[in-house]
Length: 158
Image (cartoon, rainbow, N blue to C red; front, side):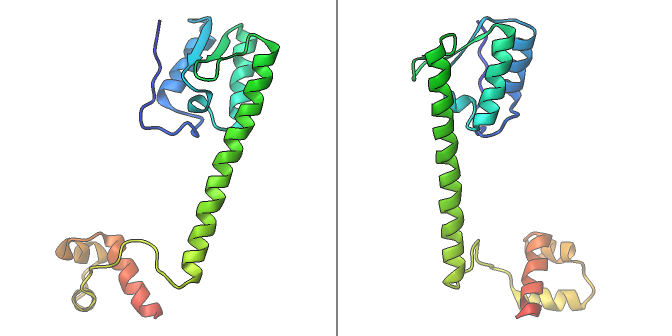
């Protein structure tokens, strides 16, 4: 028995190191059944799930989800998995939409997103006037080049 575990990597990604190894092992017919703890740990996109299931089906490999008790070797298992996959994708899409709506609301209320700048703008401006690059200023002020660039460009825009 071989175990393929991608720790700390979202199931939303179609390409994950261990998933890629599992798919290669499937194509080499190194196993007959792929057992997953939960189907949405395998894939959150219906398209990805259906492509993988089609691959397994063509190779004669079963797909079993332990927690849902779904076995794609049966017609009902195939149907149930497709429906549950669609629900998982819908849930993920709704989370993304709610997050975007929240960010729009925060911006509309005039709040700045992100970490507040702790850059000494006067000192950064003086160093820039001496001809130092953003990277050199960042090194002296112990912040990134991008933070210096953004802070000075925000000041110019204001």
